[in-house]
Length: 322
Image (cartoon, one colour):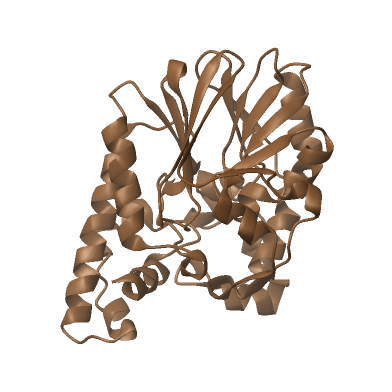
């Protein structure tokens, strides 16, 4: 099995463990269009894989844990007011997710917060809503989950969620909640990975879930189809770095789920360096393909280029946004 399939992100965090035998890799990256032709589309393959992917529970501080294995990292706050989830994972993971949640206590799921609209973070909304969860998100997340959305980079049309899976409580800038004895601060980043990304801070525990503005250990996807921005992603990282201390636990959207300010800073530095290299090449009049051929990410590829977004794909994403 190739190195990129051994990466923990592919084994659990993004449910890509089956891709090695079902689709073609190009330069270490699974081309979305190749996947579509050979394996019914990358999104479909990811969902199929999630149906059997194991869920790994990471205990953090106090009554907060993270479940890894159904799409993005899912935070779970337990207590007498019921379980509070940050992100929902992929719907076909319901059996494994239900088992993992039950192992954290008998309380029902009463609240769900979506960090943004993407299927690997919100596809599980419908079953969690049916189980009793009230769903909260940024207003743009509700918009995208309520309509057909095409993501050209993945060659996929996402259908609207059933009514019950669409967030019922929305906000524009910030929202404060008090649940299970913990103060939750929900804050909109502005355009970043999408234009609906939020952070969720658990104040007394000094833990923050930052969603997909941070892909721990890999190049990120930037969704320009719903307002994403390389500059906004960098700004979002700066915001979270400034708000953190050396003791703050930072939960990324993907990758090893227990991170910190130093690792987020390294990730930010990588984004800034690649952005500047690509922008310089674009100012010089290089085409997108010429910029990719110049390999502006070369010094970072060994650390960050082993997931679904390879060096060429990430360079093309950055080129689009500078």
